[in-house]
Picture 1 (cartoon, rainbow, N blue to C red):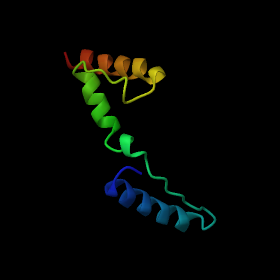
Picture 2: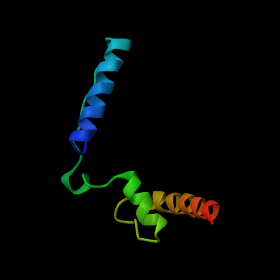
Picture 3: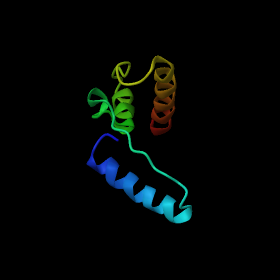
Picture 4: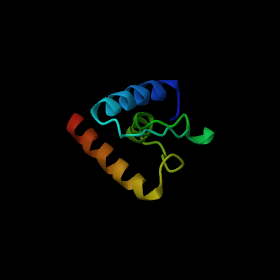
Length: 77
């Protein structure tokens, strides 16, 4: 979990999962403080404007994100 908003969503999901199957147990883990402000939507936006996303995602993910963003950009042209 990164923030209170994440907790609210996951807490609600955990409650529903338990209603569906009372044997389901949910465990919440906190994100590292250095990673808390990172959101996929923000990383995509940085990539969309040509920014460097290497410090936010693993190397193997960078190329995939850039390729998807380029594909989206071509559709919008």
